[in-house]
Length: 351
Ligand SMILES: [Zn+2]
Image 1: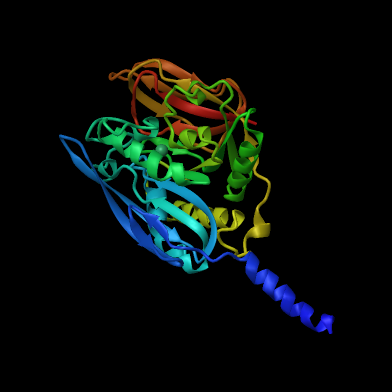
Image 2: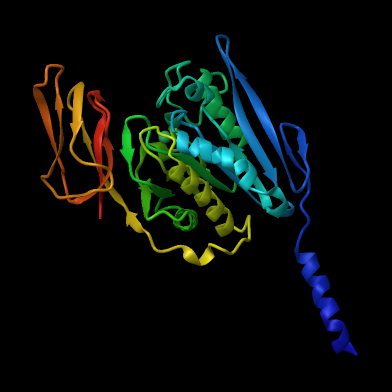
C-alpha cells in the first residue's frame, strides 16, 4: 500500500520546495508576482531636475534580485537600446526573482547627446559612486542607484559600450579580489555566461577605490565592495547604435538570467564556450592636446613596437608617435580626431 502513495508524497514534497513569490514593493508601489512596473524617479537640485527611468520585473517564482544599469554614459546607445528591448524580452510570468533595470541612468547625458559627462553639471556618472544625496545632479543620481538598486541586489550588472570616440572590442568583465574569492568566482562565472569571446578581469587588489573610506567611483565597484558579484558589459563602439551590438547586448542579459536561474530556457545553456581571459591591460596616453591619427582598429593583434598612430598639433606637425608597448590584442583605440593630454589613446590586452 505504501508504494502506491509514494508518488503523491513526492509531489507534495516537490510542491513545498517551490516557494510562491510575494508582491515586491518599489517606491512604495506594489508589483504583483508575474508582472512589471515602470517608474520615473524625480531627481532635483536647486538648479535643475531630471528623471531616472526604471523598470522592475517581479517574477512569478521566488528568487534573488539582479540590478542592471544602462545609460550610466548617456551616449553609449547600444546598451541603452538593448535595455529598451529587455522591457518585453524579460517576461515576468516566466521569471524567478526580481530584476531592477535602470533604463537610462543619466537621462540628461542621453537627451543632451553628451558623451561621458552630464551637460547639467559636467560630471561623469561612471566615476561618481556612491554619490551624495546632497550633491549635484549626477551625484544625486549615483546616490539613488546606490541606495535603491545596488543595496537591494544579490547580483549586479552595468552595461556600457565604446563612447563617442572609442573603437572598442566587445567583452564581459568581472570584479576580482584575493580577499573575496567566492564573490569573485561567482562574478567570473556570470561574466563567462554572458557569452562574449573575451572576458576581462578587473583585479581590485590594492586599488584605492576598494578602501572603505574611499569613493568607489564605479557603480560596479560600489556593488563589489558591498559583497555583491559584479560584472560589466562593453558591447558597441563609437557611440553608434549598431543593431548587431544591441542584439548581442540583449542576448547576453538573457543568457545571464538563465545562468543565474532567473529564467530556465535551457536553450543556450550548453553553448557557452571558454572565452579568452584578459587579466592585464596596458594603457598608452596622449602627451599633448591635439589631433590623433589612428592606424589600427580595435580587435587587431599587435606586436611590441608596432606603430598604432600619431598625435599632431593643429598645423599637422607630429608631436607624438604612438607605438604598441607590448604584444597583445588592441582592445580600444580612439578613432575620432580630438585628443586631450592625459587621455588614453590605446588599450592593449596582454594575452
Ligand atoms: Zn561607458
